[in-house]
Length: 114
Length: 111
Image 1 (cartoon, chains in turn orange, cyan):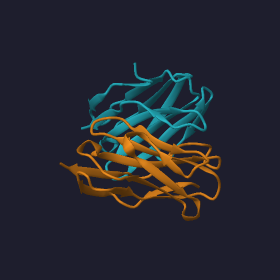
Image 2: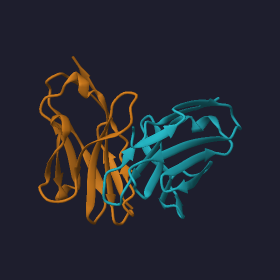
Image 3: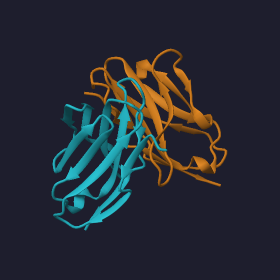
């Protein structure tokens, strides 16, 4: 079975601070990995995705994530956060073993103070 | 227009009532999903459908049923609503290898 673990449940930062949100997954085969963002009162939107190739993936709004296969990790980073980044962030994966059904982590709530 | 449309957006219902949440998508994808979001628990899969004739239970299907009326339509029913079904419900669609596209969500309160 596939699963996703997000280590940080709540993160509070000041504007301009750097951000790194942890994500680890459990699955022995090939995976597709995603980060979604949910702004307050809104639905989930895709931030970035990794299918294959360069393990450093760049997404929208200055976010990036690095796939480290040996660590089963896909951490999300942003060098300098803004107040508008306040949101909930979800790591997700799908895989052949899971019939490509999206599986989500529990999410990380990020609050950025101006 | 939104790729995935859910109705209603908000609903308050009484314990024991039957309620249906509807979802339609214009992405042309075969796969559709219903998730439930609770604070601190993330998104949990209720039901999923790979095509009109293929419907499967997810991890938390008890108390729910679904109907796939067409490729573009996937509805979720609570046969007899109970308070612990109070949650935010999301419909989503995807192809097998792509990201999921989500509706705006339905906030359901069972009193």
